[in-house]
Image (cartoon, rainbow, N blue to C red; front, side, top):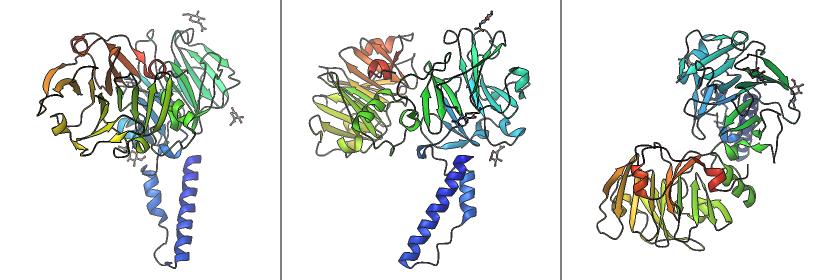
Length: 447
Ligand SMILES: *[C@@H]1O[C@H](CO)[C@@H](O)[C@H](O)[C@H]1NC(C)=O
Ligand SMILES: *[C@@H]1O[C@H](CO)[C@@H](O)[C@H](O)[C@H]1NC(C)=O
Ligand SMILES: *[C@@H]1O[C@H](CO)[C@@H](O)[C@H](O)[C@H]1NC(C)=O
């Protein structure tokens, strides 16, 4: 509610400022604000931009681990993109209350309660809704007091805390500064005091860490003791959102953000010397030995601007693919864009865009191009370039990016990566290899 008021205030302010400047310029006629129009827009979320800084009502992942951020009657899916009406995905949330917002949400994790495992729970007023794969479970909504006896109505936040993070499979509820641990097996409620924690408006478990959102900041906390360790609060827009124009801070902060961000990568490559370049939205991170550098794509790769699809390194150059075009930069200080580029992807690799990933292993001249689950190889010494279907990756889906370096092939999906000794092993693998963390293990994030 506060945000809506603030937005309205901002709108009113900018309208009156606009009006004032119009007056100064002497065009006083046609500048009458049309409040109805703006109200309409607000209601439909056109003005709901999370990059403006937003206090979320509730956050929870779905059964596939994909995050949902709730605000008012809207829902943001994933780390970037526009708001949708929550009732498009969860129509029943409207039926009973027309409250227009979700108080709290979590995804159940309890192997011992298979009926509930992986379900998304939403709390509205006095009711709880249980969804599985976006379908409301039979018998829901129910009273909160029926499903979670001892837990109050009108909650602020909720988050699951499975074993072994908590002793038993538990759900943590937040209301003001009251904290309740609800044991899923015994239904016992433990009231806790989380002294160093701010009051959370939303709480979220992501990649085994626990986050409390308050205002447009967040803090990472220990689910058992409520202790906040490390430098918190931090700005949610730096870590949980992809905001192109946000973050005009010092270079050190940029590096830390790019190391620790949970937002997926667009592209990554390792050059012949083992330097790694990772691209995300409008920013990139480069790692040479133990030296980190971060900047905007606009400043180091001006012609490309931002948001690249795939990048590979070949003979001292970075081949950067965006939609149906290839930009080629000679690696140096500064990187220089080759004359004659961008060229159509069809001419450079013989493939139509968009592609998901591309890499060349050192000392070879074969570009491996991943499009969906299909891998093509392209001989970079041959003209014209003729892609050959090399194989299919059956055990991985939704590949964000991949690179080939001294350790073999690294494939990145969301916050995780997988390693293979060679492209052939990647394609013939039938089971998932060990999962690694991008932020900690690839970029050395320390939290
Ligand atoms: C969804 O919510 C919007 C605004 O809250 C409302 O105008 C619309 O009628 C709702 N749609 C459905 C299918 O309930
Ligand atoms: C965990 O569950 C067991 C029974 O399954 C119960 O005896 C014990 O008290 C619970 N522990 C906590 C911390 O709630
Ligand atoms: C936290 O919530 C309690 C009510 O439970 C309230 O008294 C307190 O002022 C809140 N603190 C902040 C910083 O809003």
